[in-house]
Amino acid sequence: MIYCYICENCGKNESRNVPVSERNEPGPCECGHAMRRDYTSEHGRFRSHPGNWPMESDAAGVNPEQIPEATAYAEKMGVPTRYNPET
Image (tube, rainbow, N blue to C red; front, side, top):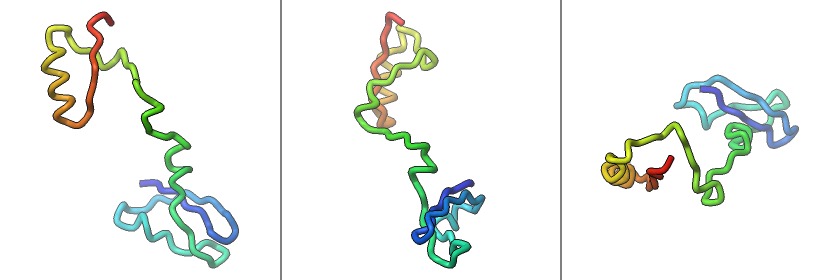
């Protein structure tokens, strides 16, 4: 996996391909100081919060007859979803 790191001292950003088991152990920067994970760079400044909802998708279509079943399954999986039978 590719993880992003930033140096606490010089501010250098670096992407490294490391195993998941080593993702929180980036090692030192070229300047010799510690680096830390740069989550902002890894996630492209995308924020998932209630302000991003509701989301709509034409690709997540469900047959209108199956809406009750799909709604129950989505809630069971922790993703409350409202299906619009008109679209």
